[in-house]
Image (cartoon, rainbow, N blue to C red; front, side, top):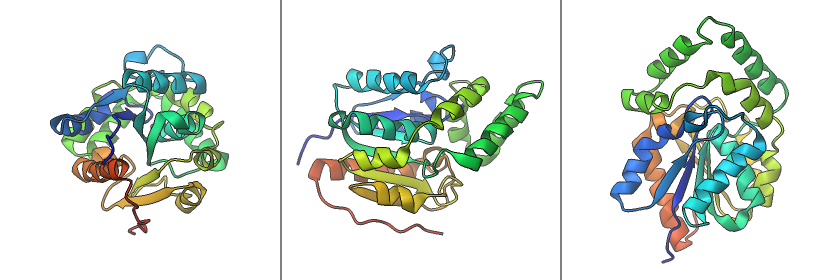
Length: 248
């Protein structure tokens, strides 16, 4: 059995590294090294403008902090940038877990999302009350607390979505030669192009978590942790996994 590289977690938009607290605790209890980073415009880096180069540099700093080679786990916004990083630096990524990011970030869906974000940003509190209320309704209490603990950087939305619209995740997946796991909640609205993402992978698996929403690691943290443990076991053993069909 091979030694399993450490795990680097990359968060979604409007949250921070704190969203991974439960996963870090589970891996820590197992003695497995792991780190969650903040992207520009979020958490400890909230004053930085979000850019593609800045996001990839933040991931690279995290990889270096963990020794130079990792299992890279990104959710939503973090998933898109994890894909882009793995495509550029495949030698530094032993395995890629892209969660909640199986929608091509372009065209009318991205335009509608940016338009909605701009409208919400015009509210007197820039949408803070609406955002926190939705998080607390849609997630279990611990998941909501983790999602909100790093602050709510609502002003990052336009820059973050605009930058992400320049990415080409299908091309990125086709360039990365290592194993890829696409992990989605069964009720995730970002599953629009799930099959196209899977087909783009050279060595891809699809895992759908039952009764989970878009923020799968926060909505179903124990199920997500179980999936991650299986992934780490596979990275260690090089055993093949079958593709798992979506659960509707």
